[in-house]
Image (tube, rainbow, N blue to C red; front, side):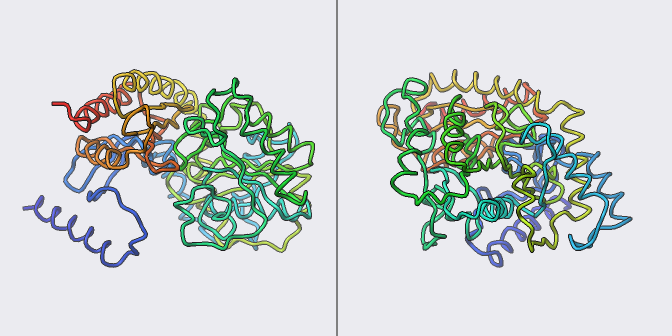
Length: 442
Protein backbone atom coordinates (compact mmCIF):
# COMPACT_ATOMS: atom_id res chain seq x y z
CA UNK A 1 0.00 0.00 0.00
CA UNK A 2 2.84 2.38 0.88
CA UNK A 3 4.53 1.72 -2.47
CA UNK A 4 1.27 2.53 -4.34
CA UNK A 5 1.03 5.87 -2.52
CA UNK A 6 4.63 6.68 -3.42
CA UNK A 7 3.95 5.82 -7.07
CA UNK A 8 0.81 7.98 -7.14
CA UNK A 9 2.72 10.82 -5.53
CA UNK A 10 5.46 10.50 -8.15
CA UNK A 11 2.98 10.70 -10.99
CA UNK A 12 1.22 13.64 -9.36
CA UNK A 13 4.45 15.60 -8.92
CA UNK A 14 5.46 15.04 -12.56
CA UNK A 15 2.03 16.13 -13.78
CA UNK A 16 2.15 19.15 -11.45
CA UNK A 17 5.44 20.27 -12.98
CA UNK A 18 4.14 19.81 -16.52
CA UNK A 19 1.08 21.89 -15.64
CA UNK A 20 2.63 24.72 -13.61
CA UNK A 21 6.29 25.03 -14.66
CA UNK A 22 7.15 26.82 -17.91
CA UNK A 23 7.73 24.33 -20.75
CA UNK A 24 11.12 25.90 -21.54
CA UNK A 25 12.43 23.90 -18.55
CA UNK A 26 13.74 20.76 -20.26
CA UNK A 27 13.35 17.40 -18.47
CA UNK A 28 15.03 14.28 -19.82
CA UNK A 29 13.28 11.45 -17.94
CA UNK A 30 9.89 10.92 -16.31
CA UNK A 31 11.54 9.87 -13.06
CA UNK A 32 11.08 11.53 -9.67
CA UNK A 33 14.34 11.55 -7.71
CA UNK A 34 14.00 11.84 -3.95
CA UNK A 35 17.38 11.02 -2.38
CA UNK A 36 21.11 11.13 -3.06
CA UNK A 37 24.28 9.90 -1.38
CA UNK A 38 27.78 10.12 -2.78
CA UNK A 39 27.71 9.16 -6.45
CA UNK A 40 24.23 7.60 -6.24
CA UNK A 41 20.68 8.94 -6.46
CA UNK A 42 17.39 7.17 -5.79
CA UNK A 43 13.94 7.56 -7.29
CA UNK A 44 10.58 7.50 -5.54
CA UNK A 45 10.37 3.72 -5.98
CA UNK A 46 13.72 3.18 -4.29
CA UNK A 47 15.63 2.35 -7.48
CA UNK A 48 19.32 3.25 -7.36
CA UNK A 49 21.08 5.18 -10.14
CA UNK A 50 24.77 5.91 -10.69
CA UNK A 51 24.91 9.67 -11.30
CA UNK A 52 27.42 10.34 -14.06
CA UNK A 53 26.27 13.91 -14.68
CA UNK A 54 26.56 15.32 -11.16
CA UNK A 55 23.61 17.71 -11.39
CA UNK A 56 25.40 19.23 -14.43
CA UNK A 57 28.87 19.28 -12.84
CA UNK A 58 27.63 20.65 -9.50
CA UNK A 59 27.86 17.93 -6.86
CA UNK A 60 31.64 17.52 -7.17
CA UNK A 61 31.97 16.25 -3.60
CA UNK A 62 29.01 13.88 -4.01
CA UNK A 63 25.38 14.16 -2.99
CA UNK A 64 24.56 15.29 0.56
CA UNK A 65 28.08 15.35 1.94
CA UNK A 66 27.75 15.32 5.76
CA UNK A 67 30.58 17.82 6.36
CA UNK A 68 28.91 20.53 4.29
CA UNK A 69 25.45 19.75 5.65
CA UNK A 70 26.72 20.01 9.22
CA UNK A 71 28.43 23.35 8.50
CA UNK A 72 25.26 24.82 6.96
CA UNK A 73 23.01 23.47 9.73
CA UNK A 74 25.28 25.01 12.35
CA UNK A 75 25.24 28.38 10.59
CA UNK A 76 21.44 28.30 10.29
CA UNK A 77 21.20 28.60 14.05
CA UNK A 78 23.31 31.78 14.02
CA UNK A 79 22.83 34.03 10.97
CA UNK A 80 21.64 33.29 7.46
CA UNK A 81 21.36 36.63 5.66
CA UNK A 82 22.06 40.36 5.84
CA UNK A 83 23.25 41.23 2.27
CA UNK A 84 26.55 42.75 1.17
CA UNK A 85 25.63 46.09 2.76
CA UNK A 86 26.87 44.82 6.13
CA UNK A 87 30.02 43.10 7.34
CA UNK A 88 29.51 39.40 8.06
CA UNK A 89 32.13 36.78 8.89
CA UNK A 90 32.19 34.25 6.10
CA UNK A 91 32.26 36.28 2.88
CA UNK A 92 35.74 37.69 3.60
CA UNK A 93 36.89 34.28 4.84
CA UNK A 94 35.85 32.72 1.53
CA UNK A 95 37.39 35.60 -0.44
CA UNK A 96 40.68 35.02 1.37
CA UNK A 97 40.58 31.29 0.60
CA UNK A 98 39.89 31.92 -3.09
CA UNK A 99 42.74 34.42 -3.17
CA UNK A 100 45.02 31.67 -1.88
CA UNK A 101 44.03 29.06 -4.47
CA UNK A 102 43.03 30.97 -7.63
CA UNK A 103 45.77 30.81 -10.31
CA UNK A 104 45.85 34.59 -10.91
CA UNK A 105 48.67 37.11 -10.72
CA UNK A 106 51.27 34.96 -8.97
CA UNK A 107 51.37 35.27 -5.20
CA UNK A 108 49.66 38.65 -5.04
CA UNK A 109 46.32 39.20 -3.32
CA UNK A 110 43.30 38.51 -5.49
CA UNK A 111 39.87 40.00 -4.82
CA UNK A 112 36.40 38.45 -5.13
CA UNK A 113 32.83 39.44 -5.90
CA UNK A 114 30.09 37.00 -4.88
CA UNK A 115 26.75 36.34 -6.56
CA UNK A 116 24.37 33.43 -7.09
CA UNK A 117 25.20 31.69 -10.38
CA UNK A 118 27.60 31.29 -13.28
CA UNK A 119 25.51 33.64 -15.37
CA UNK A 120 25.82 36.40 -12.78
CA UNK A 121 29.53 35.72 -12.33
CA UNK A 122 30.23 36.10 -16.05
CA UNK A 123 28.02 39.18 -16.29
CA UNK A 124 29.97 40.81 -13.46
CA UNK A 125 33.34 39.70 -14.86
CA UNK A 126 32.62 41.54 -18.11
CA UNK A 127 31.32 44.55 -16.17
CA UNK A 128 34.57 44.57 -14.21
CA UNK A 129 36.64 44.36 -17.40
CA UNK A 130 34.72 47.26 -18.94
CA UNK A 131 35.12 49.40 -15.82
CA UNK A 132 38.80 48.57 -15.39
CA UNK A 133 39.85 49.10 -19.02
CA UNK A 134 37.43 51.83 -20.07
CA UNK A 135 36.74 49.79 -23.22
CA UNK A 136 33.59 48.02 -24.38
CA UNK A 137 34.21 45.44 -27.13
CA UNK A 138 34.40 41.75 -26.17
CA UNK A 139 35.93 38.60 -27.63
CA UNK A 140 34.15 35.35 -26.90
CA UNK A 141 34.39 31.75 -28.08
CA UNK A 142 32.32 29.86 -30.58
CA UNK A 143 30.77 26.81 -28.85
CA UNK A 144 31.25 28.44 -25.45
CA UNK A 145 28.31 28.79 -23.05
CA UNK A 146 28.46 31.71 -20.63
CA UNK A 147 24.97 32.07 -19.20
CA UNK A 148 21.39 33.24 -19.68
CA UNK A 149 21.78 36.95 -18.92
CA UNK A 150 21.70 40.02 -21.13
CA UNK A 151 25.42 40.09 -21.89
CA UNK A 152 26.15 36.39 -21.45
CA UNK A 153 23.59 35.30 -24.03
CA UNK A 154 25.43 37.48 -26.51
CA UNK A 155 28.74 35.97 -25.43
CA UNK A 156 27.44 32.42 -25.82
CA UNK A 157 28.61 30.80 -29.05
CA UNK A 158 25.92 28.12 -29.39
CA UNK A 159 23.20 29.11 -31.84
CA UNK A 160 20.48 26.91 -30.35
CA UNK A 161 20.68 28.79 -27.03
CA UNK A 162 20.47 32.17 -28.79
CA UNK A 163 17.63 31.39 -31.18
CA UNK A 164 14.96 34.10 -31.28
CA UNK A 165 16.69 36.27 -28.67
CA UNK A 166 18.53 38.89 -30.74
CA UNK A 167 19.51 41.69 -30.84
CA UNK A 168 22.33 41.10 -28.39
CA UNK A 169 24.75 43.46 -26.69
CA UNK A 170 26.74 45.14 -29.48
CA UNK A 171 30.51 44.81 -29.73
CA UNK A 172 30.75 41.04 -29.19
CA UNK A 173 32.95 39.08 -31.61
CA UNK A 174 33.12 35.28 -31.56
CA UNK A 175 36.49 33.69 -32.26
CA UNK A 176 36.88 30.14 -33.62
CA UNK A 177 36.83 27.51 -30.90
CA UNK A 178 39.00 24.44 -30.44
CA UNK A 179 36.26 22.07 -31.64
CA UNK A 180 38.84 20.00 -33.49
CA UNK A 181 36.46 17.14 -34.39
CA UNK A 182 34.62 19.65 -36.60
CA UNK A 183 37.36 22.22 -37.12
CA UNK A 184 35.79 25.67 -37.71
CA UNK A 185 38.86 26.59 -39.78
CA UNK A 186 38.50 23.57 -42.06
CA UNK A 187 41.86 22.13 -41.05
CA UNK A 188 42.45 18.44 -41.79
CA UNK A 189 45.27 18.09 -39.26
CA UNK A 190 44.90 18.26 -35.49
CA UNK A 191 47.06 20.40 -33.19
CA UNK A 192 49.91 21.01 -33.29
CA UNK A 193 50.10 20.09 -36.99
CA UNK A 194 47.32 22.54 -37.86
CA UNK A 195 49.39 25.44 -36.53
CA UNK A 196 46.58 26.35 -34.12
CA UNK A 197 44.75 28.22 -36.87
CA UNK A 198 41.74 28.82 -34.59
CA UNK A 199 43.82 30.63 -31.97
CA UNK A 200 45.86 32.62 -34.48
CA UNK A 201 42.71 33.79 -36.27
CA UNK A 202 42.10 36.11 -33.31
CA UNK A 203 44.73 38.40 -34.86
CA UNK A 204 42.57 38.72 -37.96
CA UNK A 205 39.42 39.41 -35.95
CA UNK A 206 41.20 42.16 -34.00
CA UNK A 207 42.28 43.79 -37.26
CA UNK A 208 39.08 43.38 -39.26
CA UNK A 209 36.15 43.23 -36.82
CA UNK A 210 37.03 45.30 -33.77
CA UNK A 211 37.90 48.96 -33.35
CA UNK A 212 40.76 47.99 -31.01
CA UNK A 213 38.51 48.92 -28.09
CA UNK A 214 38.41 45.40 -26.60
CA UNK A 215 37.93 45.05 -22.84
CA UNK A 216 38.26 41.27 -22.54
CA UNK A 217 38.46 37.80 -23.98
CA UNK A 218 36.28 35.16 -22.29
CA UNK A 219 36.73 31.43 -22.78
CA UNK A 220 36.33 28.03 -21.15
CA UNK A 221 39.33 25.84 -20.31
CA UNK A 222 37.08 22.91 -21.22
CA UNK A 223 33.91 23.47 -23.23
CA UNK A 224 31.10 22.39 -20.88
CA UNK A 225 27.69 22.77 -22.50
CA UNK A 226 29.68 22.69 -25.75
CA UNK A 227 30.28 18.99 -25.17
CA UNK A 228 33.13 18.43 -22.66
CA UNK A 229 35.91 19.31 -25.10
CA UNK A 230 39.29 20.22 -23.57
CA UNK A 231 41.47 22.85 -25.21
CA UNK A 232 44.54 21.59 -27.08
CA UNK A 233 47.78 21.93 -25.15
CA UNK A 234 49.07 25.24 -26.59
CA UNK A 235 45.74 26.94 -27.38
CA UNK A 236 45.55 29.28 -24.40
CA UNK A 237 49.27 30.04 -24.51
CA UNK A 238 48.90 31.33 -28.07
CA UNK A 239 45.71 33.24 -27.25
CA UNK A 240 47.36 34.78 -24.19
CA UNK A 241 50.34 36.00 -26.22
CA UNK A 242 47.99 37.70 -28.69
CA UNK A 243 45.98 39.29 -25.89
CA UNK A 244 49.09 40.56 -24.12
CA UNK A 245 50.22 42.46 -27.22
CA UNK A 246 46.88 44.29 -27.19
CA UNK A 247 46.63 44.64 -23.38
CA UNK A 248 43.37 42.68 -23.30
CA UNK A 249 42.46 40.89 -20.02
CA UNK A 250 41.64 37.18 -20.19
CA UNK A 251 38.56 35.87 -18.38
CA UNK A 252 38.41 32.12 -17.86
CA UNK A 253 35.01 30.60 -17.08
CA UNK A 254 35.59 27.81 -14.55
CA UNK A 255 31.90 27.26 -13.79
CA UNK A 256 32.10 23.60 -14.88
CA UNK A 257 35.85 22.99 -15.07
CA UNK A 258 36.63 24.37 -11.61
CA UNK A 259 36.61 22.83 -8.14
CA UNK A 260 38.85 19.87 -8.97
CA UNK A 261 36.90 18.50 -11.91
CA UNK A 262 39.78 18.42 -14.40
CA UNK A 263 42.37 16.98 -12.03
CA UNK A 264 43.44 20.46 -10.89
CA UNK A 265 41.50 22.86 -8.68
CA UNK A 266 40.93 25.02 -11.78
CA UNK A 267 40.91 23.82 -15.36
CA UNK A 268 43.23 26.55 -16.64
CA UNK A 269 45.98 25.21 -14.37
CA UNK A 270 46.35 22.33 -16.83
CA UNK A 271 47.62 24.90 -19.35
CA UNK A 272 50.11 26.69 -17.10
CA UNK A 273 48.43 30.09 -17.40
CA UNK A 274 47.34 32.78 -14.96
CA UNK A 275 44.41 34.75 -16.41
CA UNK A 276 43.44 38.14 -15.04
CA UNK A 277 39.91 37.05 -14.06
CA UNK A 278 38.33 33.70 -13.19
CA UNK A 279 34.61 32.99 -12.75
CA UNK A 280 33.14 30.05 -10.87
CA UNK A 281 29.80 28.72 -9.59
CA UNK A 282 28.18 25.25 -9.70
CA UNK A 283 30.66 23.04 -7.78
CA UNK A 284 31.76 25.92 -5.51
CA UNK A 285 28.72 25.38 -3.26
CA UNK A 286 29.03 21.61 -3.19
CA UNK A 287 25.50 21.20 -4.51
CA UNK A 288 24.09 22.36 -1.18
CA UNK A 289 23.51 26.06 -1.93
CA UNK A 290 23.83 28.20 -5.07
CA UNK A 291 26.79 30.54 -5.24
CA UNK A 292 28.83 32.30 -7.92
CA UNK A 293 32.10 34.18 -7.68
CA UNK A 294 34.43 36.39 -9.70
CA UNK A 295 38.08 36.43 -8.67
CA UNK A 296 40.36 39.05 -10.22
CA UNK A 297 43.85 40.44 -9.87
CA UNK A 298 43.88 43.45 -7.56
CA UNK A 299 45.07 45.79 -10.29
CA UNK A 300 41.78 45.30 -12.12
CA UNK A 301 39.49 44.80 -9.11
CA UNK A 302 40.59 48.06 -7.50
CA UNK A 303 39.52 50.04 -10.55
CA UNK A 304 35.88 48.97 -10.14
CA UNK A 305 34.74 51.27 -7.36
CA UNK A 306 31.05 50.66 -7.93
CA UNK A 307 28.38 51.18 -7.12
CA UNK A 308 27.68 47.45 -7.11
CA UNK A 309 25.66 45.18 -4.89
CA UNK A 310 24.29 41.64 -4.59
CA UNK A 311 21.35 40.94 -2.31
CA UNK A 312 22.09 37.26 -1.84
CA UNK A 313 25.68 37.16 -3.09
CA UNK A 314 28.09 36.27 -0.31
CA UNK A 315 25.36 35.36 2.18
CA UNK A 316 26.53 33.47 5.22
CA UNK A 317 24.98 30.10 4.34
CA UNK A 318 26.41 29.95 0.81
CA UNK A 319 29.86 31.03 1.94
CA UNK A 320 29.93 28.52 4.79
CA UNK A 321 28.89 25.80 2.32
CA UNK A 322 31.64 26.85 -0.11
CA UNK A 323 34.33 26.85 2.57
CA UNK A 324 33.29 23.40 3.80
CA UNK A 325 33.13 22.18 0.21
CA UNK A 326 36.71 23.31 -0.45
CA UNK A 327 37.83 21.51 2.69
CA UNK A 328 36.29 18.27 1.42
CA UNK A 329 37.87 18.59 -2.04
CA UNK A 330 41.30 18.99 -0.49
CA UNK A 331 40.99 16.54 2.41
CA UNK A 332 39.55 13.73 0.27
CA UNK A 333 41.95 14.48 -2.63
CA UNK A 334 39.05 14.65 -5.07
CA UNK A 335 41.00 16.46 -7.80
CA UNK A 336 43.56 13.65 -7.79
CA UNK A 337 40.75 11.10 -7.98
CA UNK A 338 39.18 13.02 -10.86
CA UNK A 339 42.39 12.67 -12.86
CA UNK A 340 42.86 8.99 -12.02
CA UNK A 341 39.29 7.94 -12.77
CA UNK A 342 38.97 10.37 -15.68
CA UNK A 343 42.03 8.90 -17.38
CA UNK A 344 40.53 5.45 -16.92
CA UNK A 345 37.18 6.52 -18.39
CA UNK A 346 38.79 8.05 -21.48
CA UNK A 347 40.95 4.95 -22.03
CA UNK A 348 37.98 2.59 -21.72
CA UNK A 349 35.66 4.72 -23.83
CA UNK A 350 38.22 4.82 -26.61
CA UNK A 351 38.16 1.02 -26.55
CA UNK A 352 34.37 1.11 -26.83
CA UNK A 353 34.63 3.71 -29.60
CA UNK A 354 36.87 1.44 -31.66
CA UNK A 355 34.09 -1.18 -31.77
CA UNK A 356 31.15 1.19 -32.24
CA UNK A 357 29.68 2.40 -35.54
CA UNK A 358 28.15 5.55 -34.07
CA UNK A 359 30.36 6.67 -31.17
CA UNK A 360 33.38 8.75 -32.16
CA UNK A 361 35.75 11.49 -30.98
CA UNK A 362 36.13 10.52 -27.31
CA UNK A 363 38.13 13.13 -25.40
CA UNK A 364 38.25 14.59 -21.94
CA UNK A 365 40.19 16.14 -19.10
CA UNK A 366 39.68 14.71 -15.64
CA UNK A 367 35.99 14.06 -15.12
CA UNK A 368 34.81 16.15 -18.05
CA UNK A 369 34.54 13.57 -20.81
CA UNK A 370 32.61 13.91 -24.06
CA UNK A 371 32.06 12.01 -27.30
CA UNK A 372 30.18 12.36 -30.58
CA UNK A 373 27.20 10.23 -31.54
CA UNK A 374 27.00 10.17 -35.35
CA UNK A 375 25.19 8.29 -38.08
CA UNK A 376 28.56 7.02 -39.29
CA UNK A 377 32.22 7.94 -38.75
CA UNK A 378 32.79 8.90 -42.37
CA UNK A 379 30.10 11.58 -42.71
CA UNK A 380 30.19 12.58 -39.01
CA UNK A 381 26.51 13.49 -39.34
CA UNK A 382 25.06 14.22 -35.86
CA UNK A 383 22.70 11.47 -34.71
CA UNK A 384 20.32 13.11 -32.26
CA UNK A 385 17.76 10.29 -32.31
CA UNK A 386 20.44 7.87 -31.16
CA UNK A 387 21.51 10.28 -28.39
CA UNK A 388 17.96 10.46 -27.03
CA UNK A 389 17.67 6.66 -27.14
CA UNK A 390 21.02 6.22 -25.38
CA UNK A 391 20.09 8.59 -22.55
CA UNK A 392 16.75 6.81 -22.04
CA UNK A 393 18.21 3.32 -22.10
CA UNK A 394 21.04 4.30 -19.77
CA UNK A 395 18.54 5.68 -17.27
CA UNK A 396 16.46 2.51 -17.53
CA UNK A 397 19.60 0.54 -16.67
CA UNK A 398 20.37 2.82 -13.71
CA UNK A 399 23.00 5.21 -15.07
CA UNK A 400 22.49 8.94 -15.65
CA UNK A 401 24.62 10.75 -18.26
CA UNK A 402 24.28 14.07 -20.06
CA UNK A 403 24.30 15.51 -23.55
CA UNK A 404 25.42 18.77 -25.17
CA UNK A 405 27.51 20.15 -27.99
CA UNK A 406 26.97 22.51 -30.91
CA UNK A 407 24.62 19.97 -32.50
CA UNK A 408 23.40 18.55 -29.17
CA UNK A 409 24.80 15.17 -30.21
CA UNK A 410 27.67 14.80 -27.70
CA UNK A 411 27.35 12.56 -24.67
CA UNK A 412 28.76 14.06 -21.47
CA UNK A 413 30.25 12.27 -18.46
CA UNK A 414 30.62 14.65 -15.49
CA UNK A 415 30.10 12.53 -12.37
CA UNK A 416 30.81 13.49 -8.76
CA UNK A 417 34.56 13.48 -8.16
CA UNK A 418 34.19 10.76 -5.54
CA UNK A 419 33.27 8.18 -8.20
CA UNK A 420 35.37 5.02 -8.09
CA UNK A 421 37.00 3.11 -10.92
CA UNK A 422 34.56 0.26 -10.26
CA UNK A 423 31.57 2.61 -10.59
CA UNK A 424 33.06 4.14 -13.73
CA UNK A 425 33.45 0.67 -15.22
CA UNK A 426 29.78 -0.04 -14.50
CA UNK A 427 28.81 3.10 -16.43
CA UNK A 428 31.06 2.18 -19.36
CA UNK A 429 29.88 -1.42 -19.65
CA UNK A 430 26.29 -0.17 -19.44
CA UNK A 431 26.97 2.31 -22.26
CA UNK A 432 28.60 -0.44 -24.30
CA UNK A 433 25.51 -2.64 -24.01
CA UNK A 434 23.22 0.30 -24.81
CA UNK A 435 25.25 1.17 -27.90
CA UNK A 436 24.89 -2.44 -29.02
CA UNK A 437 21.12 -2.17 -28.67
CA UNK A 438 20.88 1.21 -30.42
CA UNK A 439 23.09 0.01 -33.28
CA UNK A 440 20.72 -2.89 -33.84
CA UNK A 441 22.60 -5.65 -32.07
CA UNK A 442 20.87 -8.58 -30.41
